[in-house]
Amino acid sequence: MIFLVLWAVQTIRVYDDRGQWSASTIGLWQRACKCVLVNPITVTGITADEIKAGEWKISTSLLIIPGGADCVYHQQLSGEGNRQIRAYVEAGGKILGVCAGAYYCGKSISFKGDKQEFPIVEQRELGFFPGIPQGPLIPYVVDTRKGAAIFDISCNDGHYPSYYNGGCYFPYDTKISCEWIGRYPMSAGESKWAIVGMQIGKGYVIASGVHPEMCSAELSGDPDLYSTLESKEKLIGPYALLRVVFKKLGFICKNSVHNQEQRQVVCQDENNHTHVLASIPGVFTPQVAVGQKINAGDVIGIIESMKMVYSIKAPVDGIVIYIKEAGTVNAQDVFARIDLVGEPRQSA
Image (cartoon, rainbow, N blue to C red; front, side, top):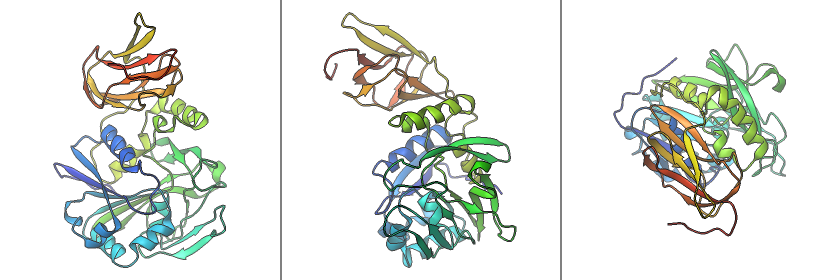
């Protein structure tokens, strides 16, 4: 089932309070939505108290419950918070639960981790998924990427690589009324689904055990995960699974997203600084900071041009001494300057 979102300016709210995965979660979703969605959007955070107040419902086209800690979400939103969320969906709203947010969408949760307080087997109030989200698929260590993986998720129209870290699976059951959207590879176990969709009143909920908002550029600190996902993106593009999910939620997505290279020009100056210049106009989003050490092949930025998205990669090892701020670029504008030797310093 597909719903059409018609708001001229879409407001996507991401739970941003105790229990959510990281202080950088909002920025992560802002970058992903900017790369994937066509219409003007605002991606902003929302606290547990704001959810309980309920004023957000009329102006929100999508509420995202992100990765983090399901048990803390339960503490923060129990009662009035969950009543407001359910009322929003039943009236026609849309929810995307990712990882911990997907666990939280079930009628109960079954989670086994590495700490004393695990396993967790508890009921949950939202109950959007009428079964029991279970996990993790592979051994999980809290607050690390031990147990993280890149899984190829099978959907009706193809296979889509996605980042996984402690997420749930949904055991297939013909008695459960839902849309079975994406399945884990058979190596993870038969009949284990990664993404499901539920019609709730007039609204729709998608729960995803994987992180479709993650592209390889977000994993540059983990060489193994980065290289695995980046190699797959060369064939299908970044955020491909996120586009599948957003289309199911009724959003209009850009026609195609490609991770093609050769959208940059490289030259050196007399100070042995390597300059990376744009070869096409577009909108640039930096992925590194001044003073950061980088290796050849690291993604230093992303440029969007003509509804296509391209990774800009460092041509050499070195230290970033200049990186352009996010915004519009023209052909021959300098993205970055890299010092092959020497100490980090700001360049004019």
